Length: 146
Length: 483
Image 1 (cartoon, rainbow over the protein chains, first blue to last red):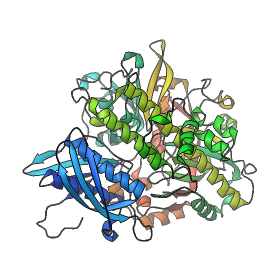
Image 2: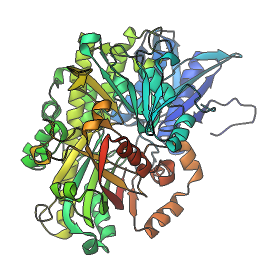
Image 3: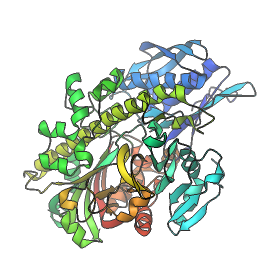
Image 4: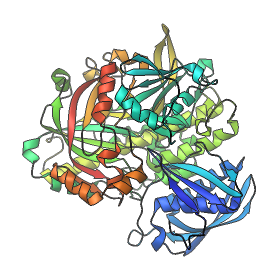
């Protein structure tokens, strides 16, 4: 992951998991946590350096809790990648409470001559999923089935 | 996950260890792990026994929460997990006990070719197969399938492919469930799953999925091998893939649908969310899971057709003249209703196998007539540098609800493999061993390196030692097409 300066907080890190891949995402607030989780997921899927922001898409999800909302959000992004081939690079959360999310994804349609894919994510799991706040920093671990 | 797992474990015998029911207060049955002392060390380091204990919380679970020797850390269930639930005793079905890749499985195809005949032709053959078989992330099928047609695919499974000309009636006889499990209901499938499934029938996918040309280098049971028409030095082809985006979407849809019923007081992991087999939600998931299972069988049948076409093109002979008959096709991520004897009484149970293979014994009604005397073939793929195995089911496997291992099982995470393995050097090393590898994905080779996996021979020795399967022959890879 690239950092602007040493002081910039890590947005996410990829975590070890024997069979699959996970991320640990961080955020100053929940919105940032959701954005950084999406960044982490797309960094697993593709090399995002060459992805330009040319298209945008609105996303809306409903769920019973913040955790379920996070899986829904990532699941929606994955769905649009799989069906519309949208590689996400920039993410915005417009509205967020425990049951509802409104967001936007900016990116480009996958083009095999320009972009390189790294991993196929089959699904976002609910495995040991818990959003926690530690010392003013929100964090969550998400395991993906790859 | 830093410290090795340190829960209680009791030795049952040299090949089986038990986690007592008293380990956690919600466990309904003990856990049992099939392993030897050497494998057990890796298993503890991986923490997977905790997931064996977690699956023992499932309502209606019968006898034991089981794990095969290729057990490794998964989500919800461990990989290599087997759990049977009784619908008459409040038994549940859980999408987490099947996984995202519903009916991921393997098929083995024989040929008349001998190693000596194709020794110098492997590279050309693999290049031809790499052209014929769409592989890798984002690869699309040449087949264009309408929504209406897809509804037929998910009910008819392999039969759909055969009727479309992708194979022959005989192929169905040698496929688990004849390539179409009963109970599929296309009305239980979301629009999204249909969208994702349309372009992927006849695609391999990526990750650990592959199409491999192999040679039989060891025969352990010549009489059984003869029944399968297999011999030492013979070329075989193995295909490993599943239900692609269609299955992933079905899993996702039903996890979401069941979540409101998740009770964290009763289940230790949200990924184990489940519904009673007799409930509307449980029945709907089963009907949708059957659709995805049938999709996977149609996919592997279509891929076999492409492989046969590739061989025809390369050798200039009909596949029938090359003797390319299907030996068998097994599912290793599925939940199925089966009859089992529990404490002397016959019961219909729902057996979840997540990274485990059904292994019916000789004489079982679901074993094809031609194999009836020897038992159901069990196909165990290994990593691309070592070997794979063909086993058969045994009567002793009644203790595992006729289940056995499914593969090597990882010991190294994908990220660790990418960091520590040089793909170019690996490719050369494999080539020097006479193995040609073609991968579509940039990082696939390092991720799937032999050293990232347990030695499948150790895994197979445990199931053979425990008597829950019998070794028939071993296959060595010659060429691999990967996603």
